[in-house]
Length: 461
Image 1 (cartoon, helix red, strand yellow):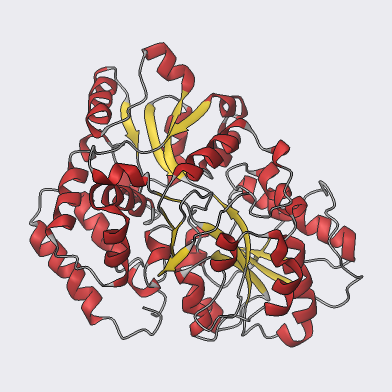
Image 2 (spheres, helix red, strand yellow):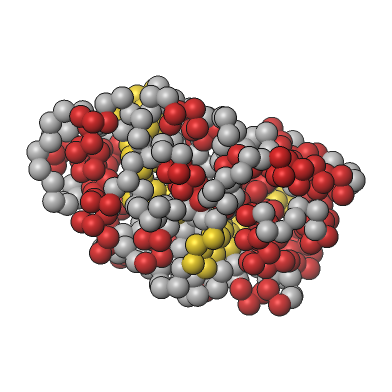
């Protein structure tokens, strides 16, 4: 795959995995942020300890290195708080190498195959299994046996490899929804759109009012995948989505054509110059009320707080509008799960393995995960013992929305094989479409299918 890899307390029983996708009948699941992967080099600055979770841990000696893709200010604050708490408990300082989200993600294959850190953050499901199958991750069944009672079956299934071994600790999740500012809607007398027609009507009204209806960006490559996912889920349903991500369905199918055609009607409402904007820049336009809507993962609230802390209480969201078809009942959405993993090729792993497993056990505590949540409340804890009274209003609402979803997916770049989701593959194909939405779609779809067909056989498919 070379370097072309791109881009939260209640999960009830009934999770079925299919290429990293999850089916949860009345579930609370997870959603995705963009990460990046390159061999981390910049050491993260540490923050003052916030709180000290108390898992069973002994005083540790030696070293422990962490490959950290949480490069945004709020996320990094959370990681630093956790590392400080871990040091206070064990006396072991974590050497943290922090790398930009997208760089880390784009380079992860090279990173894990070279001289990676002992522990790194990554994605559950398919993306985890891919690297486990390649021998680039270390199984942690012994650690999991100590902490598994703190996770529901849904989260547990998300960290099991094709060889039935456990390769990660679920640390957070975050659904994708449509965000807006409550005061803007109140001032303009806008109403929440429940259907596709309602959405188009609202976008036209916002345009008339001098607003950018939908804040959008795709410089990072992965944001466009979220829109493709939700349109495909709304129009064609969960089963077709699963088939398309795993190769059972074809990209040349007329159902895919219909998705692109529907998407084309949204593009005139997007932010000008979106191809050169990061998701943070798009989010900032929502904060400044120059844009009316923003479709992204709940993690975006961290950026809101960074730009204008007073705006946080004014943010609200709703599920992407429905199409009025048989798939409305699924109430499907993307809700990815993030995990912590241990690499297999860290040059110091033999000496650091005990420390790495202690760190993983530490991350399995609700009190640890709350430190991350307190830094960025877009990351909902997965641990069952997390104190839910600490959850803010948006998090409680996110839990409710996800619990209603009958079908939940992990996000396009986690649901399919990594060598199909990268910068030179689906990211590029989707940007091609966005740049020329009136192009010959049959030709575009044929090129996507041809790329898939040319990929080497992968046993995880």
